[in-house]
Image (cartoon, rainbow, N blue to C red; front, side, top):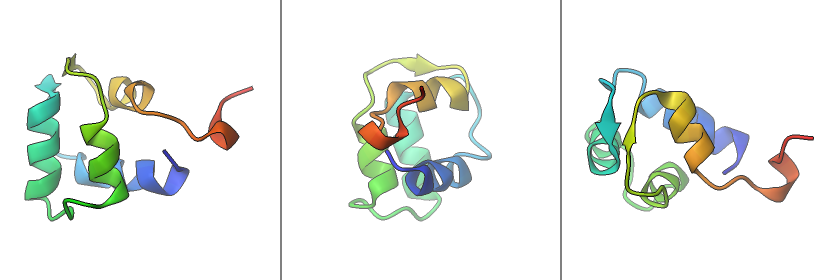
Length: 71
């Protein structure tokens, strides 16, 4: 996921109540106006089925582009 995509994810989920499962997270993003085929929604749909406690857990559950892998 690119930095821009994650910034979009953060904006879409800024008022999400945690904990939240994957389906609730995707529904919330769609309810905030995200397009079904947007990079942010595709990234959220690619997360493993789980209950997430915060945005950091979401961030660590999505794929990183090789150029964004921390050193």
